[in-house]
Image 1 (cartoon, one colour):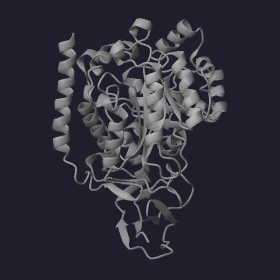
Image 2: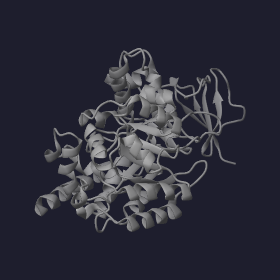
Image 3: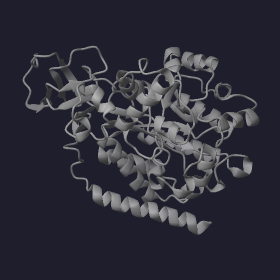
Image 4: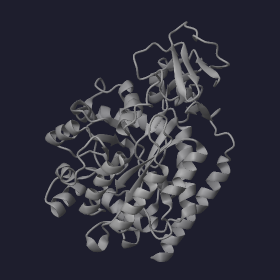
Length: 455
């Protein structure tokens, strides 16, 4: 029998349910087996106890959109102070020089940063496969397994290069046959199904302005046949809307429907520029939306209409987006940004810290099609983040759950994934972070130097 661990008497706890959990939670194996009310004792003896009286306890945060490789181009001079299309144009030429070792370091750094911020499940959208980068997703699987975080790795694609009217350089695009064959290979090799899955694969043509209609359609057919999820960027900017009108003669949601993507299998990054009727259609189809507040502010793209989308039936989750448009991979910080940006749209009384927590946990789980993570409840996976309030920023705060966001928590003290501690005392046991940063910085410099040399 697996030993039982009682995470006892937390300072505050958010479970995502209406249960009283002030007595704490009991974990056995990879699952939560008891949720205790104030003063209640576990039903069976616990071999281990963790005293959580100085900790705020929440479900592990779930990041539903990211580009790990972009940690190599944070605050990149050529890309500063630009909106999406010109920003992409200035970075595509740099990213085209990505190498496997750089990608491994970028992935490791992003996942480490996420774990330290209380994130237990991360979705990545990798769509860059220049020559030599054919194993990009395999590299990410290896890194996620080493760190023990849950990952939904989306096999992205770009098939519409500059010469055919798309945005990306030709060296970064692949043929439809290459994309579909590799997509099927990755699903067959790595995709785990059912409760507690640690590695999952989804299909993710990059965006309407970087893939052909055929690859959108074929990806939907393949996803249906192999029962995996679909992901893309949509309605992020008005530029994109104009591109769809000009190239396809239709708005973004009409285009989505025309290629067979209007289904509960689909989740979209950003989803800012939808009209009322489109929001209803997305909600009725059960299409999930990942809100990326920091990136949307940095690129001045607009504000996602979370409340209307949620009311219409769309699951709403959160994502940090790429670390070149954020420029961080900090999930607890993103929850705070979501709270504030959505208040800017709807008013202070209509968006609470509980809404922000819900989007980052149960909402994000729904976006990824998961019902085994996202809340602290009996039978759920033991994915848990614990935060201390012992920094200057929290001094004088009164409501611990609100303080975590309002006072700006940056880092978790402990993080558990599937019943195993992955972060202890604010660090990853066995990982040399200084060495990782030194290697990662070198990789970033090398990437920039390669880009300069090719100009």
